Image: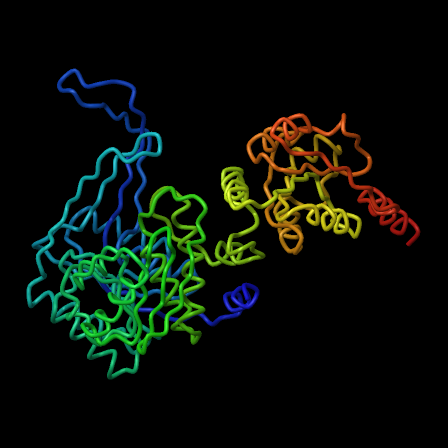
Length: 488
């Protein structure tokens, strides 16, 4: 199934998508805190780095572009430095900035986050949340009407900053209906009647509960909320994002599809909703089903929340994420992800098997060895030497195949459930943290020469030596290639 999604992403045509909504400039002031102010009992942040990102509807457009679509953007800005920075950032992303309408009466919406040690200490907002006036709304609608004919669909990104007035939303729905275009809405606030006519509406759990007055606690509450949203918005479909529970797609008539969350570790949910709605738009507007769009959006969201701060997720990242998976989770993992992965399996009473190696030029001997290792338990975790550590072990000229390619090939094997790169010469630290039940090595080792054997056994596990397949080795393959090259 995931290979089908990968093929879809790689071969799909690039849809042109009109993103309309509240554009935001996200600023991150990063630094260190080492002292308290002598003026007041407050920490002093010494800023060492400032980063600026596209936020709100502008971040949706950035995600559309990075996921393979052609993005057009319509939104409000002020006549200020923030607007200049936004225009430059859009230009760098290859997104036209001509759709930005200037409103002299309001500032460009800007959110500044002060960060220390990966933690947000304070956020400062510069904005106006009241609705744009009738004249400005008319200018926004004129800009939308000018671009809608060349677009495959529309994404409405509502952050409640005043651009999406009732008249603008009604105009979008009317123009879309006349042009036969789908509209996806990322909503805000309590009153969802203003989104009447949307093709798809995508609230999160908190937003859905607020809009329909249902305290969402269990599965039945999600269905009640979806039914109410159908009545209020007349939407064709509803997708509710559920945080660490994933997301659920609801269709009129009661049919639903739930997708569990893919992220093993969450650093920052900022911008995750933008990524989801952009991915939905790119796939849906290129002619594919909502279910496929949701699966790809779910994978994209997992990538987004795994990073600190707002960033646009790329199509290549999603393709890599959707590459071979185990139980819905991407096989190539960080050490932290692998530790959590193994811990979860062990809590379910499953047996975790671990082995490691360079696996440079993977051959039939490797495949048989790994298959036998997997047969000893429920899941096989493979520690893979990075290129630098292979070079230290094997010498100049190795590895023949880079670490990313080696990890990808290992992940494609059904007997391998997780691949973790490690840069040390031995996997001892990785073994200590993963805590496997069974540690496997090849027949060229003995119990006394297996790194980590004492660690595994002290945890109640065991070491298993598996005979190597005779005549199958990377060194032999390289020698044979050299021999034939000289002979030729």
